[in-house]
Figure 1 (tube, rainbow, N blue to C red):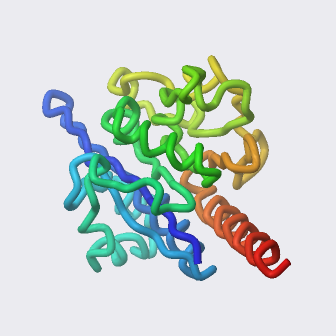
Figure 2 (figure 1 turned 120 degrees about the horizontal axis):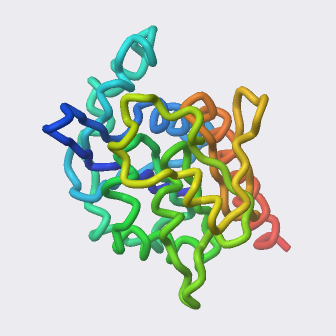
Length: 234
């Protein structure tokens, strides 16, 4: 059983524009389901700890027509998170950064999160992120000072999918920042899209890719466990 750390935005609000955002429900609950189905365990963390702010739109009927994610949210699954600063990164086999516009505000430049990402990466764990979740990966640098994503194939929420109502409110363009240092690919023509930038770096494009992204992460973790078991038996 692998241990995965799911990192969520604590939330962001702009009262002047009546704008509230945070983590996106589908992007936690779909991968969580796939990981647990495969027998892996998932711990939750956020910048502030406690109950992080979910993006209210992600529980709206337009994005959750059957009320599946609202029911999971209301059950309290995501009510308790560990502050990122208190996370012992070496305890985890993988980190999964959940998207939602909130990630661009509080996760992107958080140095404690960058440190956790680096420990997982340096100890041969899997670094993964979906939708806007790659935001902190863009600004994470390795011990030698190079961008973590430098030259790697990645995906994430593209400019042409951003809703008009957030125009001018976001701190940067995720696609533009990723394209500066990595090989950004939005997977044109594919309903679900994820990509491995290396054998330990996985990114998913959008909410609709969350399930496939989670299934792929779960599959890889299972394969790594089986490989380690075979080496031990040899």
